[in-house]
Amino acid sequence: MLPLQEIKIKTKNNREFYVHLEKWAENHFDCKLAAINLGPQLPADTVFGPFANGKTASDAFEALIQGLTQSLSKLDATDSVAVIDNPCNTEFINKIDQETIVGSSVSVLVNGK
Image (cartoon, rainbow, N blue to C red; front, side, top):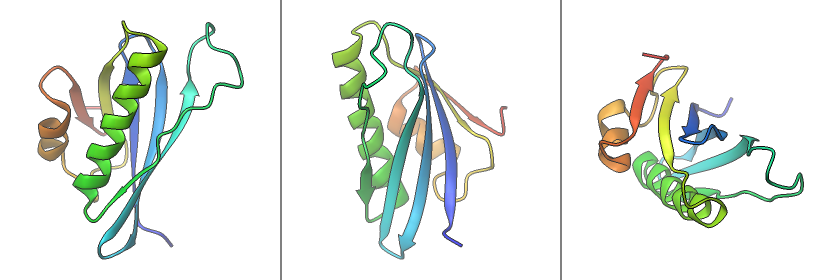
């Protein structure tokens, strides 16, 4: 079974994304993003990446957040990441490291708390 960390991302304008941070090898982590709710104003065929990878979980997560932030700014200049929740603990990247990457304006939760 592939080791992974599940991450839920919610934006200020109620868009929702699910991320799988997967460990493929000792120095290979992938972040896969699924758009769950982009809002009614976007067409159903809107394609939303990003997929990111890195040698560490932190590198992959940081690349994903940068790509997501850039994509959001193109879709809706008023939107931004608001809440990150780790519903099944933090297997690879802990809360403090996530807070360092996303900054103080984003709430980082573990198991909804």
